[in-house]
Image (cartoon, chains in turn red, green):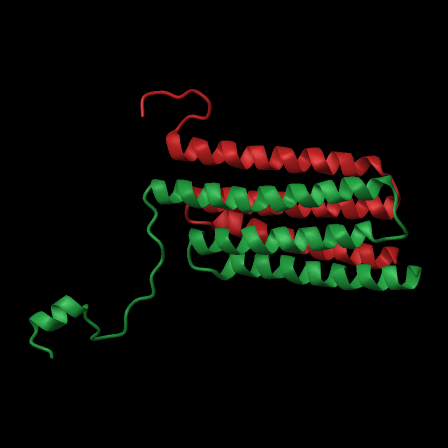
Amino acid sequence: MTDVLWGAAIVLLLLAFVCLWRADRGPTLQDRILAVNVVGTKALVVLVLLAVIAGHDYLIDVAIVYGLLNFVLTLAATRLVERGRILSEGPR
Amino acid sequence: MTLALDLASLLLLAVGLAFVAGGTLGLVRLPDLFSRAHATGKCDSVGASAILVALALQGGFSFGDLKLLLLVALVLVTAPTAAHALARSAYRTGLEPWRRAPAAGWRRGAERRDAGAP
């Protein structure tokens, strides 16, 4: 069963490299942010796969924190692109 | 019982991988940002949560499975929200949705009526 999980992890990594191609080529900036977000989600799944393979349960907590950080990063980058700043509510 | 669990997790793993591959294909092939964000927001969240549920079914139930279900809820909330935020910011900064070029000789209704068509 573990080699099936290893296969799934490797397939996910290959798909992540395909998403990196979109990150490199993406015409608009938001394409790049989207590709990074997708790669982050894939990395999260690979992390949990490795956690189950190796049997280390604490890696799932790492994956949860990583998922949260990935989400906050995407929102911050989106707001930075849209309004040129992230936190301060300057003049509209 | 464990055979059924293993079979179910194998099936879910395959379904999850198919969805994630579909989302990646959409990310690469689709013409503009809106369709890409739409594709990845949905396919990745479903695919990732299918794989995570498949892992939760692995080898009986333990405390780690509750965290896995929490992670599924996390992915199901964050991926679509991020895709929406991206599409909205792109729309607000003036990105026009992609439209297929109309067939040759096609004209809008108003122009055709001016040209005297019935």
